[in-house]
Image 1: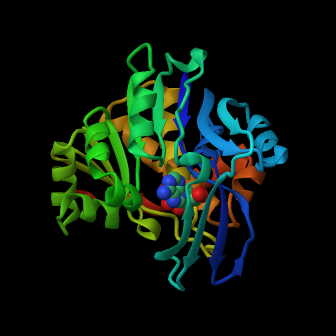
Image 2: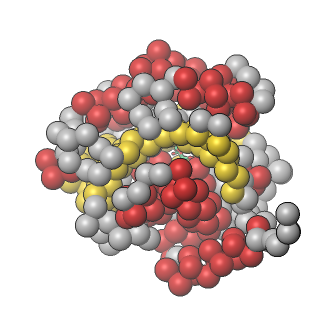
Length: 307
Ligand code: AMP
């Protein structure tokens, strides 16, 4: 089985949407990525850190999905990273109410020995220096390195972010962040500028408006499934990234054609994630539901025009 190494925050999230409010629940980029990637035939491991306030039941939830957590450090007496967000009525925009790095503040990642030869590395949202350090520890060159980041790191660690971007193949980023990073309003121009910063492939996520994949002069668009109810968009981007990287890991094919399918798999899994608070929907999701929704994706965009 191919190996996927996942790096990213593991968090307590407190979320408020127009539909309700949660107290501290399981969050962070890595759990969303791991749960999403667990729908593929692969071996995965998470590298991250939590405090000893992190409940065993959350760890069990990850291991139940065969995610290796030997690289998830538990700091004695430390507090787990805490993030809190408030969504506006359109659910496409949110305010960050709190970002308490806690144990993430001086985290030194340690890649488990048996994942130093991972086929694919998914650098989820974390300090770019941590993302770089993980790449430094790899003993063989991964077939693909995917990076996700956010405006927080552009604001407080831009030089380090630009450094790690030189070492990756694919970046996944949302539209607002792509504009911030490139200084371009047009997403086509933004993608071209971002490609010059390092990654061959640029995926721009547009929330309920789908995602764009750019490579050289080629562009592919994947819609988001029009959903009757969106409950909580938190982690949609990470779930997308997990589906994208998971599919590539399983299929071992890093061509642009195959990446189109990876974008569809990512969008498909993300469409489930938003249906309940936090990781709840990803935990109760089964493979049949995933396959049946893929069919819906296909019908959504298939048409027959003779040219
Ligand atoms: P997304 O909705 O895809 O942007 O991801 C939301 C997740 O990112 C939440 O579960 C947060 O815990 C996590 N998160 C928020 N801010 C940060 C940050 N600065 N570094 C790492 N993870 C973060």
